[in-house]
Length: 89
Image (cartoon, rainbow, N blue to C red; front, side, top):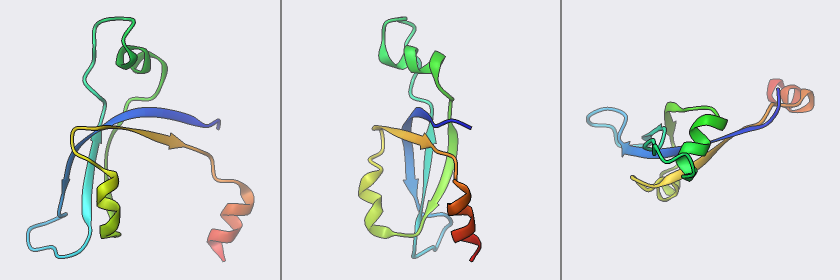
């Protein structure tokens, strides 16, 4: 597997369920498609993975890293064998 990057839009940041007092969910999706073939979003749409993802974040201070309506990069990097071993110990 090689490293891959996709562009995503932060669509929502919310508590994972009603009454939750810790952590939050971030919903990411593809940025709006732009039919102009020269636009950045159109180029990324055709060249990189498309994303639809919900992630749970327990670090409350990290919420500032996910401004709703903004675009972010999501990088996919393979885990090395050394990292796998460290995770299993």
